Image (tube, rainbow, N blue to C red; front, side):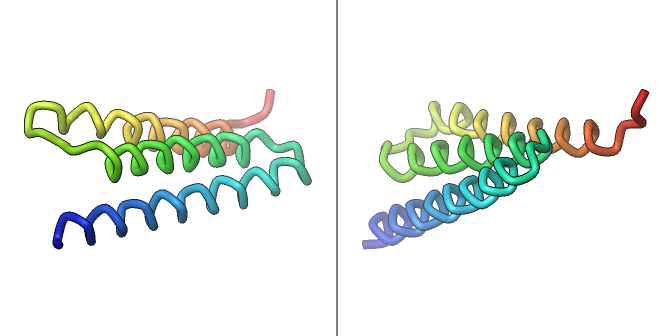
Length: 89
C-alpha cells in the first residue's frame, strides 16, 4: 500500500514538473529569452526523471543513477541564472 502511494506522489510531482516546463516554454515563445528555455528544459528533465523513479522499482545499487537528471536540472538552472546576470559585452 505504501509503495503505491509513493508511486502516485512521484507521478504527481512529475506532472507538476511538466506543467512548470510548459509554463516556462510559453514565456520563452513570447519573449525568445534563453533563460526561459533553459528553465523549461530543466523542468522537463526533472519530470522525466521523476516519472522514471515512479515507474521503475529501485534497488539500492541503482538508486544513485536516478539523481543524475536532478544534477543536470540544477546545472541548467545555474547556467540560466549566470547567463542572465552576466554583463553584456
